[in-house]
Length: 410
Length: 156
Ligand SMILES: Cc1ncc(COP(=O)(O)O)c(C=O)c1O
Figure 1 (tube, rainbow over the protein chains, first blue to last red):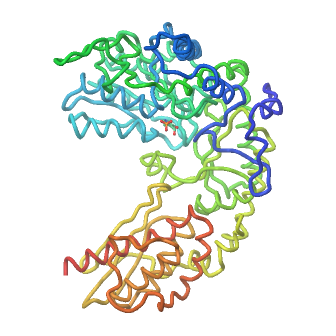
Figure 2 (cartoon, each protein chain N blue to C red; figure 1 turned 30 degrees about the vertical axis):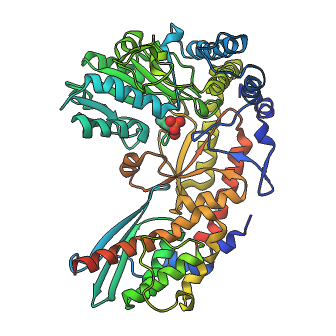
């Protein structure tokens, strides 16, 4: 493995803690990642040395805080291959970034019967905003189905895209780990006259990201899954789109002028950032992308492929037909998210037993209820890996899993 | 950490493996109600047939963990053939065992003292209190039954 995981683990203070007297085996990074020392330090440092409100102070501290915020924007822009810093809009999380597109671009451009196409493997964050637009504006929601191997079924893509205005797809599924063919989908969307939005929440933390190579018009992701703080997310969009979109929330920071009669908006991206922004969180996200860049995103991905391969082999060899791991079987076609079912034992019970050994996995519908329905289950157990995980974590999971038999298998 | 043996008592696992009253009833005369645990996606479906203030029959379905399934099974066995008033006392006693404040939406027992109610097998669910995230798994079926019975009484 290209990453020195022992050295990486040493960067994450939380890795020192114990759970129920056992070493922490954290396998829930698809929900949120841990934070390395440089990110924690950057946030602390911001409060200790720069804290003040941004964009409207004339004193030195405020100038420095503003610079720190805009420096973070620059770092994020570089990290995802954006041409200009102004293409980066800071939001609260990926959910808010997607809602921003639905509420601004969607409200301004979509009307009754206008098709928006999504897929069966979306997170609720990329479903509910469109349901809301369907209720409010009568848009038509269309679904790209998935195949039993966890990949999208693109047989009917042309028909689904016929007349569509937007195709919005998760780059990596948070349940199946499937890496979707984003470029191919973006090209197909554009050929059909639709725009392309990518929910990159599970992509930017794990794979080298280039928004232009994706061919996307909008890309949303969330800081806390990529070593950054909670409370900060990102919307990237093509500059022409951002220019044309109406503002999102109204208030301070997003205006150029306000009179009794009305207001005019600030320039992009501030037009979309009403109110005092999450400054420390943005600074933390800047430190997070620096940290990931330091590890090397190619190496991060290489590590993930190797570890996912090890996990699939280990669990399948150990448990054979007693375990069903959903999603693609080929590590190169998936992220390090393993949703599984074990001996028909309910995921809540599996997760409860694993917790006793300090093994953290998530049990539930993973905010993807339509997908759960397609998979034919109400819930799965999900183990998800990141830069600080290694083979010993997979072994700990495999060892602890068998302990569930004591309670549930006669 | 509390022992898992406190949570997964043998009697709970028995109800989980051999659920009592799993199935469906014809609607009508029975009433059907669904309950969801939004956290984990568990679903409980309760069918209940009420006549003259008596729970004549009850069946449950849906998908859930051992705690939610066992709780449904034990509840169905405990309330079948009982009066709606007795159900209210059970519900009250169960909720206080789960350390839950009385729900203003739930009807309070109209007579009798819920402290006197013998919960029987249901007592085994006491250990769940030590695992606070699992309390909802145990109470979902009770919420759903209360809803179903209210509906049955409203339509009768
Ligand atoms: C694919 C996907 N999209 C969107 C989200 C939403 O992220 P957040 O809750 O940070 O907005 C998540 C994370 O839960 C996710 O996995």
